[in-house]
Length: 161
Image 1 (cartoon, one colour):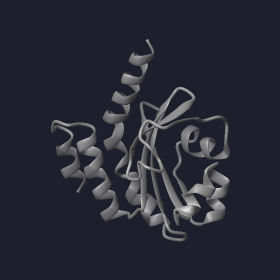
Image 2 (cartoon, rainbow, N blue to C red):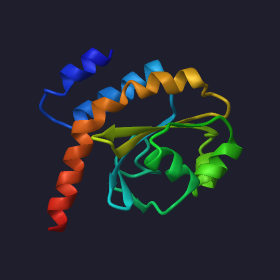
Image 3 (cartoon, rainbow, N blue to C red):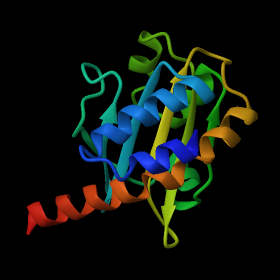
């Protein structure tokens, strides 16, 4: 499955073509109701993909001040596994919106390149859905996002110049 995704990176229509295929692959291998992909941009994160764009729109940006979640995932480069709603309250300011969607567990996987966290894969599902085995599967997909996240950062920097 990962080999198939690697081959798709060469196809025209990037990155959306790849993001859609990644969504399908993660749904099959890990499971999710909500998938978002965020790249880091200075002290902000910006959304480049969402399978629920009406609730979590693409190009949504949010500042990432110092938070325990940011210390773990963005700075510590460790995955976050939130098994229940209490864990999501600890991690996310928008936990009420998440709960309103029937979501109560999350996995966040840092995408790291050259020693820097350049983005995250964010999977959410019903409460108690995720286990450590899901984290290990999802981690294998992170390097595939390096080209797309680097390109998103490049475009963002160019638009500000």
